[in-house]
Amino acid sequence: MRSDKFLSAIEILEQGSKFALVAHVMPDGDTIGSCSALMSVLMENGKHVDMYCHDTPPANLSFLQGVGDFRKRVDKNVLYDAVICLDCSDETRLGDCGSVLSNATRTVNIDHHITNTEYADINIVDPDASSTAELVYALIGKLNPKALSLPVCEALYTGIVTDTGGFVFSNTTAAAHRIAARLIECGVDVDKLNRLIYKNTPLDKVRLLGIVLNSLEMHMKDTIAFLTVSRSMIKQAGFTDANYDDSSTEGLINYAIDINGVECAALFKEIENNKTKVSFRTKTKIDASALATRFGGGGHVRAAGCTIEENLEKSKVLVLEALKNMLDGMV
Ligand code: AMP
Ligand code: MN
Ligand code: MN
Image (cartoon, rainbow, N blue to C red; front, side, top):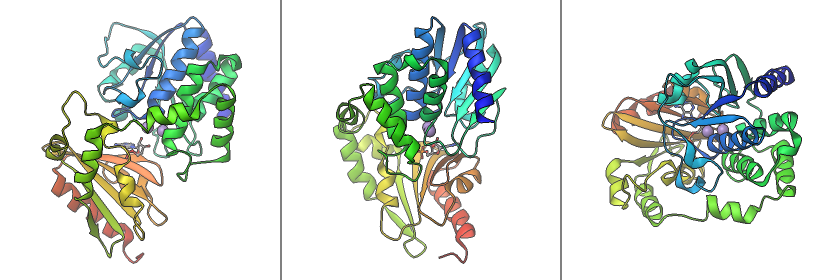
């Protein structure tokens, strides 16, 4: 089943000459790494590739090949043989770049979210994969096994290492380790990438950590932990529009989910007055993707997210209500 779909995707990639790759809104290492890797391989094969992302990729990923080339606007007159969406569970995750789906004769969706809506002509969706990068690695292996150049390996490794939280989250598998081992054999410098991705913290992010930890709220006999990131906290930490991006808040939620006895952590990030991005992490009792789906979002069993069109306080009330319903009688 999965290999039939891989074959169809390979046929499209081999026969076409002009492709668009799309990353998801508020991009992370997996969506950007997957795009970068596939772009490099296709370009090495003489193809024309444009990459799209609604938001600017985080600064800590700027070492990846092609990361400066993402476009935010879609010109409806530019036509592609195929559009390939990477790590995007549904069309809303493409943001304004979703319109590019109409600029192509074929569409391909490569993803590992359990909530994927299979919106493309060919949907390579495997919720057992640690990351989309793992699926791109398999695709590249079938397309051109000699294509594992260092930039391609670094991009794939970045996708796997970021989505597994450095090979510790519940989506960490033997397969993910095997692929990582192969990428290291091909030249990936683990220490170098770890420094570039994680050990390069902007001072403002450390200041923000201090402020955000002070916002900790515990609910339901200390089984639920909420953290808040308001726009004023971001400003107070010293961020400006120029140096603030999604990596500025990445990892903060782990301080909440890692608390002894906490079953579910939620991080509420104020986007606009009545727009709150919520990240969920869960331990054993709650399906994070089911919780996020209640608010029109999605994700995985242990990590998911959604955007609620309400202010911070109202969003917290709504999430707490949903959690109370889900956890009724459980804790
Ligand atoms: P985050 O909390 O943003 O790190 O996201 C955790 C996981 O949930 C990632 O795999 C995201 O791709 C996914 N996710 C986050 N927000 C959404 C959303 N609004 N819709 C679908 N999936 C999401
Ligand atoms: Mn992602
Ligand atoms: Mn992913």
